[in-house]
View 1 (cartoon, rainbow, N blue to C red):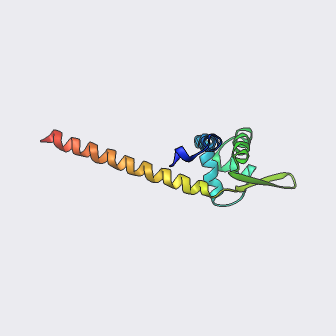
View 2: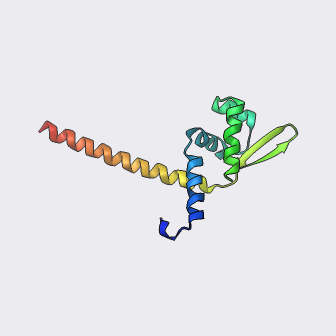
Length: 116
């Protein structure tokens, strides 16, 4: 990442996006929405959460521009508005998998050396 090329404003925007994604419950919401639009009630049931907590996190994700909402009668439905978030998550998952693999190989090597 060319952080030296980023303005202070852009650095703040990127940091805010990472703070938004830094909450595991919000990532669970995004996973649920990856399959398609869901109502608040469907999300509450799928996440085994409570409505006020789910709504709070939905508001944060919406404010960050990651999800969009629409009203239909008395129900509110949410959908992903920035699918790039899944590419970012895939990159982080790949990086963590590689890191874990290296750590495992290192531990296995140490264990083999200790047995000699």
